[in-house]
Length: 213
Image: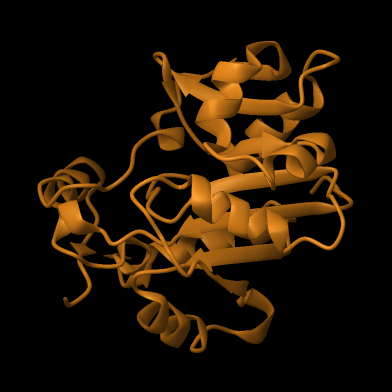
């Protein structure tokens, strides 16, 4: 694997999962493993070992699950005391937890069932090949922004004190954002509604189970 120095992953998992019945989406199980486990394994396979996880509405349940993971896989847990419907506040919580700005910050969501090491590696390679003056890379599939978004140190330093998150950044400074076009739906396919779970199971041949409410 490519040795990446000073790369941090920030996983945003503070939402209530209200459209999915009020469950922590990162604890959805696919073939017996939670989405969080799958994502942490993918990051490790991509040689990204510094991981921070922002929790909120389901903090206790997620923390209890994290405690069952092997020590080397456990992310640093961060609590968003006032999680809203948008990830911008959780992004700010994560950025403010950094004592120094990384060369690369990967911003991910906790409900991306198809995202694996190949997609993470491809996004970082695209970030490293971006044009000069672009401080953020956002994957885009058919015009839909996805994850992982990748930020450089300057973007991290600026966004930690700004409201609106990456969406507002793109609107205010489009010239600073590289849009990376890809056809890989793993970057955008998430689980938001009850019907998304059986659809994923049918499409992939997986056993998909929501956590208990």
